[in-house]
Length: 203
DNA sequence: CGGCCGATTATCT
DNA sequence: GATAATCGGCCGG
Image 1 (cartoon, rainbow, N blue to C red):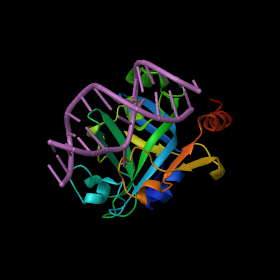
Image 2 (image 1 turned 135 degrees about the vertical axis):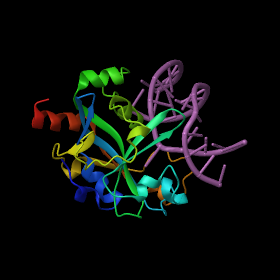
Image 3 (image 1 turned 90 degrees about the vertical axis):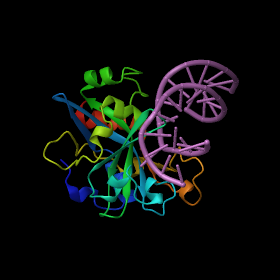
Image 4 (image 1 turned 135 degrees about the horizontal axis):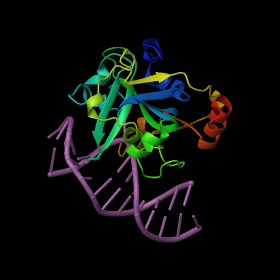
């Protein structure tokens, strides 16, 4: 299980380190898990794409708190997004988990999210994985380093830095420069992920 | 695979 | 009252 120290740096430093880690969810006594394959960093009140740009609000207050907690918010009238808080207390920062490669509890996850189950496009989106893992507002603020282990991270597979693709964050609408173009999105190609995970786990 | 479009409502101004 | 860290369906290549 990953400890608090892992999460304490700036979001743009922690985000690439999260690629290859295993996200584990305990739900109804079942273990649901996947390898993280895509992340985005949101860092500080100056980042005009970050929810914290307007200061602390009821919604974003978790981002101002201790690293290693879940920041889960609702958007577009229907979707939940999972972020992991990073950096120091009072320095708002978080990493959005955008995609996972499913490896445990596939049957249960396919019940939670029947749409395109077992295909490449099953869990390749931030709102898709929260459906499969049954994450919503009730877990906002949850400590991923706590002993309850409802949601936490484990070491997964080793990912060579050169396998990561960097690009601008997406879905930012009218966010001004330079924030719009910052390369704060990290992605592991599905085929490379498959190969690496296959070698490592025989999956 | 890429682009456009409508859905649907909590949150913030 | 406007906006949104998205998704799925439908289109064209």
